[in-house]
Amino acid sequence: MLGNTRIRQLVTDSQLIDNFNEECLRNCSYRLRVGKLIKPGGAEVLDFNPEDKKNWLCSLWWKIGMSLFHDQAIQGEPQFHVIEKRYELKPNELIVFQTREKISLPLDLSASYTALDSIAKQGILLINASIVEPGYDGYLSGVLLNFSSRSFYIKPNMEIVKINFSRVSGGVDVRIHENVTNYTEDLLEKAKNYTRTFLDIEGIENEVIGKTARRVRRNFVFGGIVLLFFLAFCTIEPVIYNLIWHDSWVPLTSTHIEYERSLQTRREMQIIDSLIKKVDSLQIKLDQQNVRKPDPKPKRRI
Image (cartoon, rainbow, N blue to C red):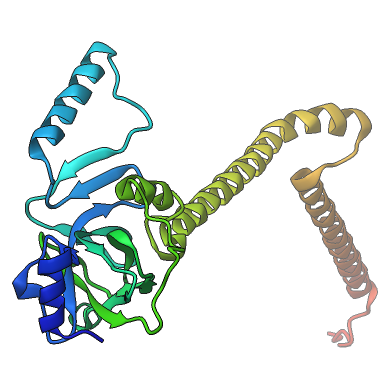
């Protein structure tokens, strides 16, 4: 593994690290800084340090002019924005980054880059820590995932990963790794495969909300239909009663109950009348018996 003296010498002699910053150099590693951010979906690029502001401004004016003349924005092209302050990476969100530094490895060197311990302790996971093959010439990239419960802020020139350089024993005579011509465009294409949140939590939430809303709407409609049916039945029932009850003497629902109650009351009244008549009859018989009964006291003679 190369120390900082050898790394500094290779930077001077063979441009090992483009955009080299002495403050990012450590004893046996170099801390790579974030240069660009590509949002999942590949629709937007956030540039912390645009390499050519003049060309960027010309491209921006050209896009504005084309959108004005055609009355619509250009479709299918990513939107480039310059960030001067910071980017908020919310919990469970993903972001693709491209390093500001460019690496140019000779055939006798390889490299590996991993997440910084200070970044990992804040709940930020570097998904694709990797090994850089000998002979590689270009930028490096990675995918950051916020596993914490708080937002993580990515600032301009922020140190994001560290890279170590190692000597390859035996040497390499064939370049197996093919360098990418336009690294940013390649990242944009790959970023289309990512969702904005880990495991597409946002998509799952929207799907659950949609299913719940559809189920509530379906139950609401079904309950409304049932309620309308009962209201209609209660409204039509008297009409049906008038048509059926008076013509065919077939009682319905509450009318049947009222009819049974009236019959029961009539039967009870008949029983009471019968008992009253019996009581009156007995009273008459008693009165007749009292009339016929002789006076027990004898008449006194004078």
